[in-house]
Length: 311
Ligand SMILES: Nc1ncnc2c1ncn2[C@@H]1O[C@H](COP(=O)(O)OP(=O)(O)O)[C@@H](O)[C@H]1O
Ligand SMILES: [Mg+2]
Image 1 (tube, protein in one colour):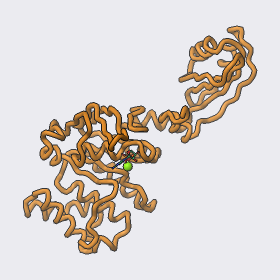
Image 2 (tube, rainbow, N blue to C red):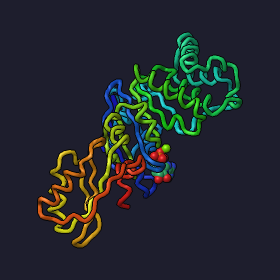
Image 3 (cartoon, rainbow, N blue to C red):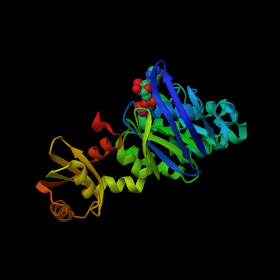
Image 4 (cartoon, protein in one colour):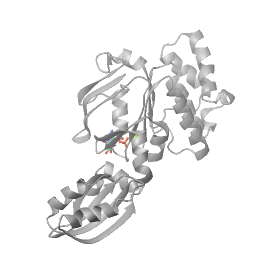
């Protein structure tokens, strides 16, 4: 449904996104997860046709976002980071205005306005001026606007940012519900949020996609990946390679320098493999100097996934 190929965007000389490629299948809910400045908004603005890429292409429902921009945009509902809401309009008036811009015929438009207000549970505010609404309700108006013309694809940029927790729950549920009939891309910098809503997660940082994983795998890693730190005397590479052979080990990184090294071993949650690791070291003739185990925090994993720890 969405195919992005080698999207690159420079703001002046600043490289905001760098050769980003991905695909989103019909009916999928995909999350863009990344810290501020990662390039999420830039990517979403390009996909929704608000801004051209410096190079690269994208297709939405088969329509090129550049050469078939009108067709592509018809298939997309976009909730920008800051919703351009006209504060001196009523909710209904605002939706009507948007429906007109989108060229919806009157009958369809009027019935659809009632429909989306019900879906987003804002029908009680139809005649309320938008400036009187809380941020959460404004965001719901923004979502109503995005789905008004019944697009196949929804692009939602940080839909829950700055909203009070009770409404966050409502908005997340709404997005999940919308995901049953739409292809959805949502961006967030909240780890827990993507694993709640999304089937697949793309982790972005410094303008690049660093990792793509299923929500299930990611939350598995979030729940209980463990890290064991082992201090061993001997040739680092051989020790690391021996440790990698131990069952249940995901990854081994060599830390420090010289002959006495520390090895950070990441392993499957829930199993205690310290015994196996110690035996592997000793049986290979190396001296084990120390061994300790700790759980990786959410922060550790995020840092790891975005490769920030090396910077
Ligand atoms: N209009 C702009 N002009 C110059 N730099 C920009 C502009 N918009 C965004 N940037 C920069 O591009 C990078 C990516 O921004 P953005 O796509 O908004 O990231 P995110 O949405 O992940 O926070 C950031 O470093 C940001 O400062
Ligand atoms: Mg952003």
